Image 1: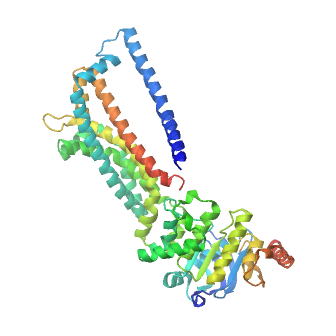
Image 2: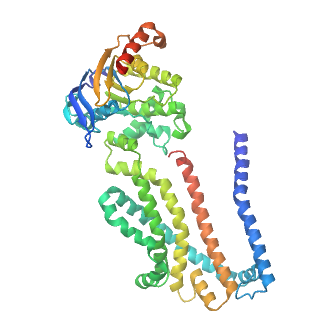
Length: 268
Length: 255
């Protein structure tokens, strides 16, 4: 048993290295190439800063960056969780009646196609400046993938399983909780993986238009500020931190995904 | 004691025409006594599975009359709750362990936890799966999955068991073994069993009566009584008398 676990651990490590080494190698090549390009062409840092300038900007502004990332992360997590919960309930509603789905689904697609940058200032105006408005923008942009994927999972039950529940005269409620919802779990998680990245983008877009008070600002605000003041190395640092936040978020949700899906893996 | 629990099936002039105008079943007359084991064989598309769906109340007859214990199928199912159906596919819920899959029918009926526990253990014991209780369906072989499906069907102590080609996907050895086990269980409890298969040998080995159907539209072509006493030994499969019966049924099937 022990040996088996040991073997499993080594295999996991190899699997992990196989997953992480290639992208790290790409990163190394890109960073080196980038620095070489900047040096060769003698570009000014405000046009294209090299990795060295960006690192310097990160070092000098580390405190503000960390503060901004944590604020943005808070808003994104709140927006994501809200969209997950709301998206789930909307999908359940859709799955219970074809009429409800047909009447409302086209409008749910609005959420996906609306130019969020254009409506974000309106949302901030309606909901109010500060955290609430930013969460609302993040929520709206991350809602649709949850609705779409969860609805698909809830309604794609195979006919024999439908028969099984019909033969036991299961109530609508039993069918929902014992068949449709567990069946939809993998799809909900797929939706979550898409949404978690979007929620970070949503939070940053929201922050373009409002801060968290007079002294606290998220990454979005920093991006606008540094752009306006042509502090390009600092802007690059903000973009890197935004991307990092998105990646981290995606990684956490993907890991959860994998842990939960072990059970569902071969189920479908 | 189990006797009075078993169900009778009466079909008189049963026909079924699908919405598209396709006539799936025509003039089916069949009377099945309580506690008997009847198999239906026929080419694919002869409506044998469709007939099971009618008996289960999943679909409804277009013409004629079909009753289970003198009640329309759906009423019999809902009021007497003695119907179990083993579908072609094991239809296990992939996210539930074996134990919880077997418990499902009782869960849906709102049976108390403690009661469920003893009955699941009993049912798993009966099909020899108590060691597998904590596995997930994808960890089981096809034969094991079908056993779980049977354990789930038997947990409600049914009076009528419908089986739709349950062992069709298994290899011959696996099918023989499950046939033997099924007969053992049936001899023990004597529920009424209506078994659909495409294997004449399987039908003859299991049942007291084999109904042969023909296709387009689905009709009863012949009925064969199978007089071998129960319990039926494995050696029956190689018995010349049995072989002749199988040959006669096959002739009807092809003719």
